[in-house]
Length: 389
View (tube, rainbow, N blue to C red):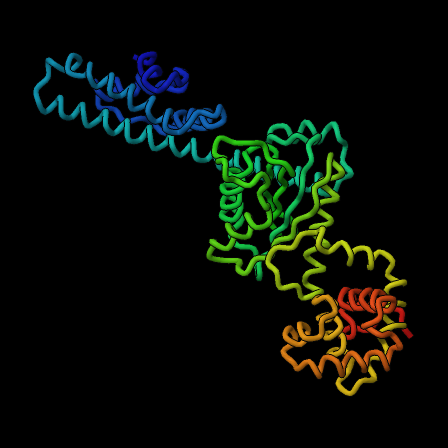
């Protein structure tokens, strides 16, 4: 009977039935309810099934199939009794089924929660070590394998920052896993949290999946993919996503992560209004800030005279920024600033007078533009220049 039930349940191990069938037989003959210790044993079998990776549906099917097969033999066991005795025996068997299956499911659920917590801890520790980039490579390769990560591949890291606090972690991770796995495949992808941010580690060149169509783009934009899915969540909007550049190997993961973190910080400092920022778009700022003292000196030397203007340096800096962004076209700059062309030309002349640098002269333009970029990166003049006298 146990073997037949196991076949009904797709080959579930017979051992998971334990003493369940004798319990049913006792109930049919004597009406005895199972003792607490007997039910505890069933609960342990449920935990064992979860640890073996057997689905909850198959385990429950095993128990119900065993009960059904015993039920078919029940009339032969009690055929000498009257109708009320048969009804009482059937009720006793159903009580055992109810208690046993409930206990089995509870044990299974407890084990699954423990497994999820254990996996989440392993995932969190792994992502911490990967993003730090200074762990032993051999050990990391072994730890990454169960998560489907091939550390020899080229990866990139993307970070998502909520507007306020991070929403329910499991919900956010599940949402991202669903869409990222669907687009990029479920290997070489890891989704976790770190320091209040959602972290996605993904291959730079996703493997082809059966879901792809001839019209699909060869490379999905990871940042846009994440932002679109996260905006569906009830909490956390508006999200900002930063994507590091793709780099090979273990240390490439840590490098991509640092680029993504720097991009988030820089975007906030520069008041970038785009929801998705790519590290390669902010490379010029990283170059400028690599030599902090030099950029402070540049901004102080070239732009500090602008504070003498009647309205301060800010309107003149905004004019320079718009002028360079529009290819040095005054009319387009005026549209962007919502002022007249005359105002733009007046401000450009004022900048020339105060600084000695003419924005219209190509040889002066590069110096002014580098200084303006540096001022934005340093948040000057809102914040004083560090080390400036």
